Image (cartoon, rainbow, N blue to C red; front, top):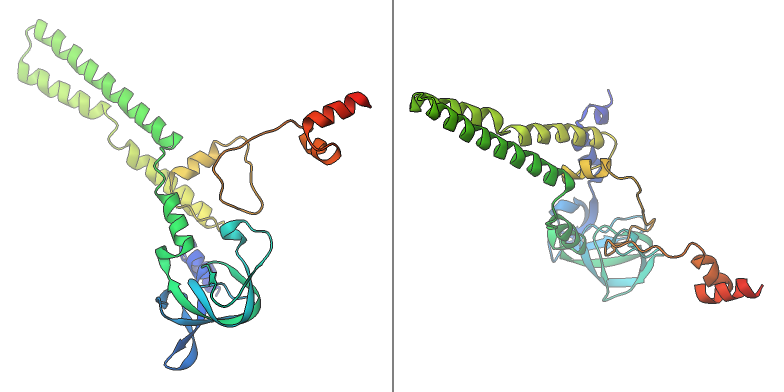
Amino acid sequence: MNTAAALPPLDALRGSLAQEAQALRDGKWQTAPAATLVPGDVVRLRLGNVVPADVRLIEGEYVDVDQSALTGESLPVTKKVGEDAYSGSIVKKGVMTTLVTATGSQTFFGRTAGLVQSAGAKSHFEEANNRIGNFLIILAVALAVVTIAVQLRHGDDFLRIGQFALLLLVAAIPVAMPAVLSMTMAMGARALAAEQAIVSRLEAIEELAGIDILFSDKRGMLTQNKLTLRHPASAMASILCGDIDSFMRCVSWK
C-alpha cells in the first residue's frame, strides 16, 4: 500500500517539507528534526543541506549558499566564518560548523512571512461580499419600515406587525453567506493542496482566479509590488544606442 497516497493532502505536504539537521547533542553528532533546534545549538552544514534555521558560521573554510528564494540573488553566495546563513537557503558547496541564532518566526524567512501575513489590504472578494451584504441589509430594513408603516396605517395589530418585520429581517439578511463562501473556498484550497500548492489565505484563491495577466520574476525576489512598462523598443535601444532618445536619433539618422 502506498502510505503517501493514503495521507490527506495537507499531511502529505507537511511530510515533504520536513527537514532534519546534523546537530551536536551530548558531545556527538546526531540527526535531529529541524523543529527541535533552539538558539545555541551547534549544527553542521554540508553539500545539499537546507539550512534549518538562521545560523552563524563558526568553524570551517567556507560554504556556497543558494539563497535566491530569500534575496533573489541568482548565484550562490560564499559565506565564511563570522557570517550568517539564513533558514531555507541551500548549501551548494563546502562544509562548516554553525551556531543557531534564530528559529521559527524569528528567522529572516519567518519575519518576511510575518510581514506578508500582516498585510491589511482587503481582497476584491471580501469587498464584494461586504457590498452584497450591506445592500441586502439596507433593502431588508427599508422593506421592514415600509411594511410597518403600511400595516399601521391599516390599523393592524402592532405585535403581529413586529413579528412579520422580524421574520423579514431574519430571512433577508445573509447571515450564513460568509460561512458558505468560506466552506466553498476551503474545498478549493484542499484541491490545490492535492496539487502541491499551499494556500495561506482563502481569499487568495478568488484573487488568483480573477487574474488576466500574471507577471512573474523567475528569481522570486521580493519587490515593491509596482510594475513599470517602458517603450517596447527601449531594450533594443539600450543595446544599440544606449537609451531610447539615442535610439530614435540613430534610427532617424539611418
